[in-house]
Amino acid sequence: MRVCFRSSIQPALIEEYRRRHAAVWPKMLHALQEAGWHNYSLFLGADGLLVGYVECDDFDAVRARMALTDVNSRWQAEMATLFEDSGQAPDEGFQVLEEVFNLDSQLAAGTQ
Image (cartoon, rainbow, N blue to C red):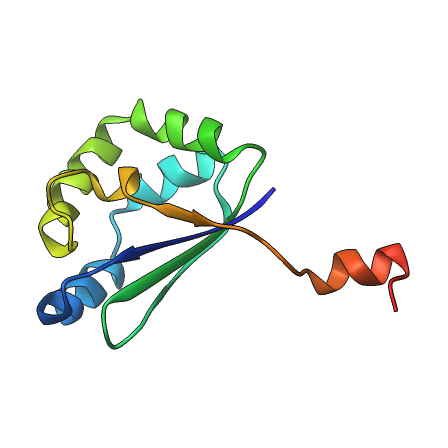
């Protein structure tokens, strides 16, 4: 399963967001990997638009597995103040985007 999602960082806090993601806690990295997050990337626009991409078996399942970890709770609390909607944990505010095109899928299907 490929999942793309969006969220928003407060523009005034973009550099702090970048700083924190340049050195994600090793326990958080391992927890993501163990929970089934693969090929996970975050992309950040100058206006605070945050777009994430992850490959996983089931997005709800990998999020649920992360929710069970103490390190995720601590990370979400640490990051919450940087997001536009700081009233909820950042990973609860993801807006999943619909995939409307995938090159490999269409090539495999023989679409012309």
